Amino acid sequence: MKGTESLRDVGRPVSPIDEGRLRLLYELGCAFAERTELDELVPLVVAKCRAVLRAHGAAILLLDPKTDELYFPYVAQERPSVAAELLRTRFPAHLGVAGSVLQSGRSSRVDDASTAPQFYGQVDRRTNSHTGPMLTVPLSTRQGRIGVIQVVNQRGGRRFTDEDLAFLETLAASVSVAIENARLYAHMQASQAHLREQVASLRHDLARHDRFGNIIGSSKPMRELVRLIERAAASPIAVLLEGETGTGKELVARGIHEAGPRAAAPFVAINCGALTATLLESELFGHRRGAFTGAVQDRRGHFEAAAGGTILLDEVGEMPLAMQVKLLRVLQEREIVPVGETRPRKVDVRVLSATNRDLEAEVKCGNFRADLFYRLAGFPIRLPALREHREDIPALATAILTRVGARLGRGPIGIEPTALDLLVGFDWPGNVRELENEIERAVALLGDGARVRREHLSDKLQAGAGATPGTPAAPPPVSRRALRASRSDTPPTVSDGRPVPLREARAAFEERYIEDVLRAHGGNVSRTAATLGLSRAMLHKRLRVTRGRG
Ligand SMILES: Nc1ncnc2c1ncn2[C@@H]1O[C@H](COP(=O)(O)OP(=O)(O)O)[C@@H](O)[C@H]1O
Ligand SMILES: [Mg+2]
Image 1 (spheres, rainbow, N blue to C red):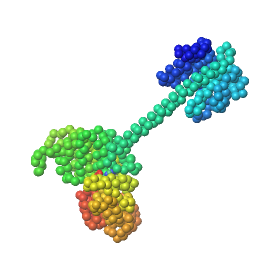
Image 2 (cartoon, rainbow, N blue to C red; image 1 turned 120 degrees about the horizontal axis):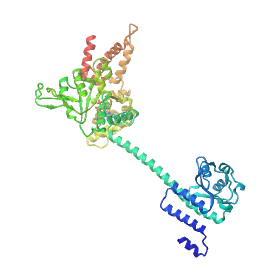
Image 3 (cartoon, protein in one colour; image 1 turned 180 degrees about the horizontal axis):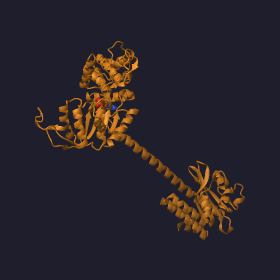
Image 4 (cartoon, helix red, strand yellow; image 1 turned 120 degrees about the vertical axis):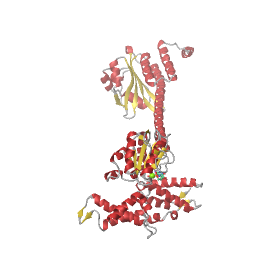
């Protein structure tokens, strides 16, 4: 061994004990080089240390900074019962010889510990032993002192020598470095794990953002909506999207399709309110040539066009009852019969539906089949009206401005804070769709200007701000006025001073409300229907009923 040679060179005799010590230091160096686990290495070092110093016991005591106590994580003892007891022992870090060495940083060699002034007898009492000669050396790292290494009672009642102490100090230096490295490593691993978790969570957010990037809004209702979309996308359940017109029902339906396993297959949306019963049937299920006048050739329906993908039945509440029966059968049997054919064809399509009506109420008044409702509404999702998440209006406005700007091939279009305030303050009965229209209009008025200002916004917004009194009332103020009116003159809830059934009160209110909105729109049925969230046909029907009554 090289070290032994050099010691011989200086002419000192090498005792067998010295060789054991040198071998221990050498082995320790090798073990570090191999990066052996601390929990394997340190017990070995402690055991060997006890052997080469021919002691009854050797131990490492570490400081627990949280409780300011010393404890014995590594113990080598002649008597296993003493070792077991020590492993359970903790004591205040300022007590005993160990405590004073830890505090002072100076090694200690005593011939009879039990008579030393700092001696802490509790440990001996617990272990039922007697500590005589003892060596205690601090374990120091760059972060400070972390504990001590202690060796007690040399065999044959001998005392420890200064040479023994010097050896233990050398050993302690190596052990300290090993413990420090292990701790740094553990700390690094913990922070790496933490970073990995953070990256994963950010990735997840990013993926979610990518997936629903075109659905704008970070308000609480919108975050909740995105959470529901994710859940709906992950399951094949029938989703019913409920919300006022322009709240993004179609956008959300597309989001559910695109985030789910059918994303690669087609997404087809059909407006059930826009077609007659016959046309709707042929649109949905297709028809054979000659099935009806005008059916000049075979035509594939939307259900087949959406094969493997998703179909959105938009405005499903407008679907005629006769058609509802047929749709129910398709959902139950998972097959369609094209108009003019007799043989059914299998279809594999996920069905989503959307409505701006209270479908449950429609079921109660017999306009919508209950069995179909339950088939469609397995997972109802309610979309918030824009006035329920005004905090998203600035982000929506910016996105719309960017889109409109890009379409017109011009640079980014800004918006003045005062104009934005008007947008945020408005009630938006037509929701995001209406906001889009308003911004498109403003950009058209803007010409080459770079920023949308108050004066580019329409009268209804200016009126909302109270800027121009006497402007023809826009739908929201009117609706409030209508409410007030119905409360002031003949209250519909009470007739002859006696309460009437809710159905009658509701009918009376609806009647007056519809008339009011119609008046506010100068008798324009389309705009009134849009404001009320009804189809034109439905509005006409209601007007016929109420006017027929009156
Ligand atoms: N949260 C939203 N983020 C971005 N655009 C939206 C949002 N909600 C609605 N829109 C837009 O508003 C318009 C109306 O949405 P749409 O899905 O047709 O509404 P609905 O079917 O409920 O009447 C569409 O141009 C849509 O892209
Ligand atoms: Mg729609």
